Length: 597
Image 1: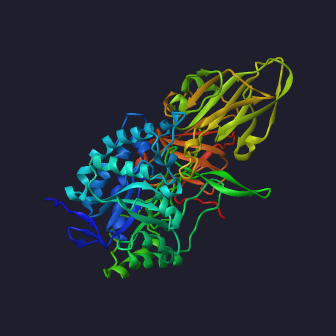
Image 2: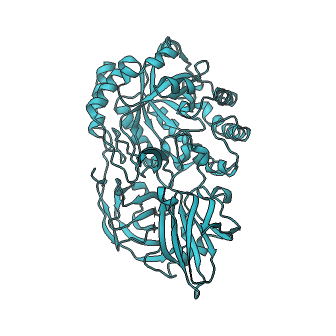
């Protein structure tokens, strides 16, 4: 019989009246193949953790309004049960917004179909959506709270809200909704150690404030101590690494300094190691940030999407390997708790295989199969993905221009995130980041239909900062030809969720966005990495599963493939490449490949 235990917060955390030292490791079920959940949880425990923490991303659990999924990769309940079977407590960060370098910070993209949407606020339609989501989510997780015999000891109201707003009424409303739907364990918030941000995002009377920090923890806790002088100190996210962005440098942190901070925080209070195991942003689920950049003496903010890998420099790497950081953390935790370091030898080793090079067997251009994959929607002016009930992937805008011989300037206004422009199926230019502000020229001819195609990629909605309400993807404002906004557009949504409809017997033209099929044989499925030397940019599907994005700019130059995604015997790889830059082969190797800094 599982006992009901009461979690209380006084000068310390108390579980059934006994002090509880929370040593937690962050691990996200939605970033890990379900067949590996138990292995990864066991390794977090072997490092010395007694608790695991996970976010709950709203967007994967309610991908369309009123349509819920809690199975397979998103079987949250099974994940919680596995943690309990291993004797781990759970901190559930089930707030509407999670950040986490996850697409739109876990908010569902369909919220943005409302042109007036104001997320993370008391905007009534947003609160109604949150309420309806909680009415489905919380009854599923409520029976797993510690006072009902489960492992959940804490739940989070909001995440780093002080970086976004100071609307206390909103924080109070979310806390009230959680309790009304069945949350009975103590609530927490987490914010920066900076005083103004901590005050803006905390709700001390209803939720224990905690902090997120990656360096010099001991010296940066004064603001938290001032708010809760008689309550326990906790670092809800101790950043022991960092994420990579496309085109950026590979992030590496000094393990000696990290280890010292870990020891300091364990002596001062409670900790959640972020990340204990990072995992992978499979599919189109990577988020993005805006980073400041000095251009011509002015500070500008530049869009920066995260890579597919979310390895994060974690002690348990993307494939489940134990790193040097794991062993050092294990020793540090043991030295503070006074317990012997757990022997990790009994943990399952990670089996990897290099399956070698395989050739492209089929290929077809996007323009040849466009009508097989998508049905056009006509609008006078371009509309965004969200207005067409599309959340992720690509969208193609098509229009007919004058059948004349003339030069015409073109400028894309309000476009997110990267656009390829074609005239009569010939590539004209690619716009990204600052280049959207540059006028380009089209050379029209009198003997052609002058078909204009614009392929726009959603590279990931921002997961952090003040621009969440501006994350509509596609073309938001319009296409300017010379000095006028051009009208008459057919919209082709391309979420790429129906690649079984591809007809490779149709035409292929070099230099165009295209699909490529590689058939390969696996004798024994084991973990591997896919590399694409000579390929430009795109995404990869393995046996109908979206492995994620690739891009030659790096720093990530390989895609992790967990063994459960492979079949014994014949396997099918489909690559969608957008730059017209390809090779005749791909290769499967044993180790991840990162571009050197």
